[in-house]
Image 1 (tube, rainbow, N blue to C red):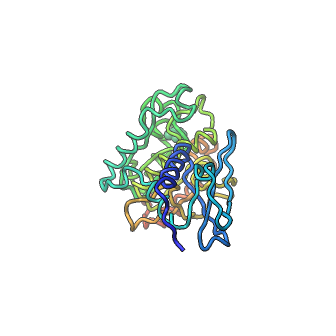
Image 2 (cartoon, helix red, strand yellow; image 1 turned 90 degrees about the vertical axis):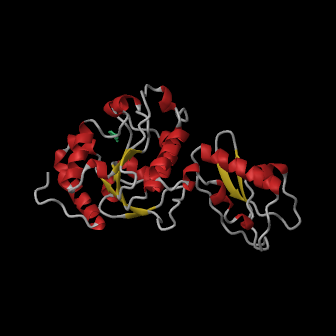
Image 3 (tube, rainbow, N blue to C red; image 1 turned 180 degrees about the horizontal axis):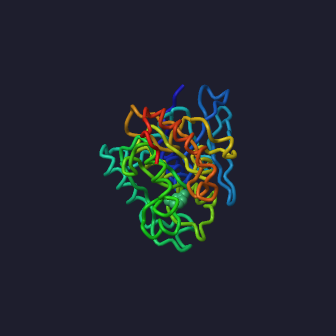
Length: 298
Ligand code: URA
């Protein structure tokens, strides 16, 4: 049986969800609990150091404690409330150029993770066709990208451009972005926390661009997007069904896309023998998109 959320609880819930969203947490799970007359109570308690998610069914007639109410308490009547609250400002905008601009403005002069004070010159947002069918996602900007404010403009970028050309298209026809938008110092790998903090913005970009296929370049991109830990060998060679976490496209006809994993161009520069394998990955993508490679691949 559905119950209507009382306004106080609704406000507490909204505030708590915004708080989690700020921390980069967008996914909440509801599990049915028996003995609640069809209701569900999911409480999320926050400790200083850890976030513990636990189910706490209310006893019949039990009052909700203030602490419980301040935490997330979600009767099943709240079926769509997470969705409503998690609506992003760009979701009411149909023009993808304007929608991406809104996301960029929302990002602002970002200080959400430590990378902002570790020598970044600028935020590297993303580039390309805002309606691209194909999207490439790398790890994070290097020195050249940090300098120019555009992803993949260094040596790795030139190789990526050649890979795109070999597919018979131009760089301008795809959308290119990274998991983190600020350069990690010394080109170190971005930390998990940095990826978790930054990737919600990428998820929003993906929901706006609505690609048919995403190619994750390298392990960091693949593992972050797929939220799984596996080796490149395990990750490559197949498609995954992908939906951007924590955000919905405003297009009801776009229900996610395919995601393929290939080697990062920087890795291919270090080990060019793997280029053939990367080409196999791209051919799989081309087949999915109904693309034909030019007769003489670059
Ligand atoms: N490597 C990446 O992962 N992204 C860039 O934009 C450049 C290099």
